Image 1 (cartoon, rainbow, N blue to C red):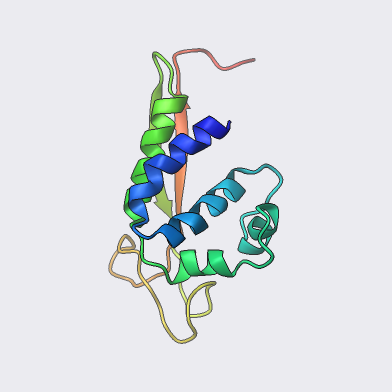
Image 2: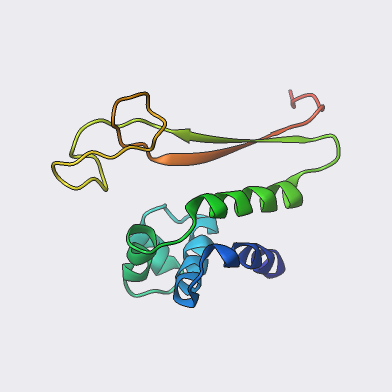
Length: 140
């Protein structure tokens, strides 16, 4: 497992130009992959041994890194390590529109756009979905 994680970390290294960002991103990624850990920053920080989530807050809220390149690197990594002969992998980047000024992570009185919600300005948290399609019949 550690060798696979090291390969993933190496593929993500170019996304974070600064060493301190890489040092924050890898524990965050490790926490996301841990079973029984919810996706909030406090629980991830505790699971990876950080006393407080401030490094993760900085990484996700203020740091400059290439978000799309990170998604591309993870998709390429998953396709290379999870796909088998005769399988098709489908990656779907989906957003869920949220309107209003009181949505999580939206400063009071402002609205943000993901660029994918018609002409309305909306907050759209993005998710990546992965589907594996095989020619095998589903179990009965």
